[in-house]
Length: 155
Figure 1 (cartoon, one colour):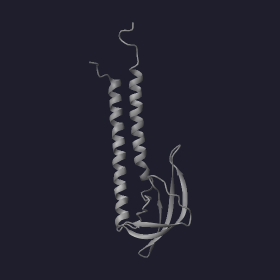
Figure 2 (cartoon, rainbow, N blue to C red):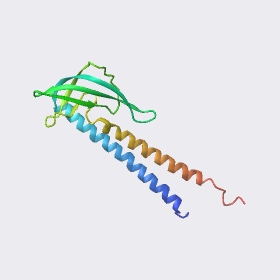
Figure 3 (cartoon, rainbow, N blue to C red):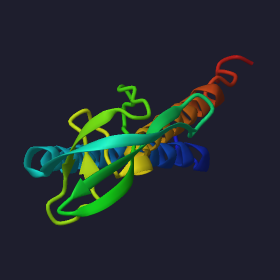
Figure 4 (cartoon, rainbow, N blue to C red):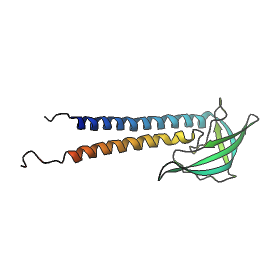
């Protein structure tokens, strides 16, 4: 049986931490989806107007569309910033948007397509998952590379 040296212990710790990051990202994504889904199902429906669209760079190869929407609810005007985890819908200035607004907080809105006022929090699950996977891969690659030393019977 081989000993459990400090190098292997660091690899195990990195794999465990990476797994926790992936799991945390998955749980946060599920929670955000549930909150936004609930808002779409039972929120107050109103129509808003897109007043600004911007592409926001959050990494070398990752960007999201952030949409600023004006809407009125219960006689009050609101202007909120929405973004999406998947960023699949393309909005343009002046587009009408069907919003579902939280019944207790009129500043929290969502679209059926997944755009919501949670903004960049919607991007966090993907970053946690990616960081966890990278951590695990690097740790395992290090273990494999270090394990390729000379064999005991060679020499």
